[in-house]
Image (cartoon, rainbow, N blue to C red; front, side):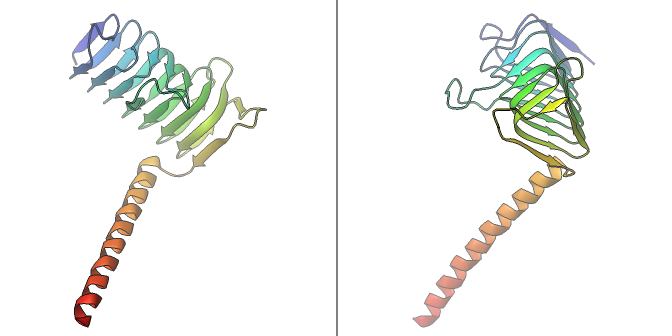
Length: 193
């Protein structure tokens, strides 16, 4: 599999789309996008950027999304891998993995969606504070929640992909029921005339 190695992803390099794996020695700057058919490895920090991999994603630094109430970026910040996502820490990030999500230190106000496991604190503190987290098999952290009573929500035992499909089908059903109701009203009106 071909591997593309770059120093950093910024306005100078532009967005990346590569049919293979991508190794980024430094950071991925705000507003940038990296897509790879293979793995993505980042030596620094991913800030307000989108990463999508056909394999796994490893971020040695952290993944930082937009803080609530601030308008740094209008583009959605997303890290999505078909296999695993590993990061040093995550803050205000949306991370999806086809298998497992592993965060070495802390995850604060994130949305973590893993098909199997979420593990927080493999090497350091292990705090999972705030946000919404979905995993089919397990969510593991050394400390969950905070003394400040920040809402931390879990959906465990539900396959995230199947749950999303179920919600999409329910939404489609509701739209069709509304359309059917409108048609029946028009038919009733036509019969009166």
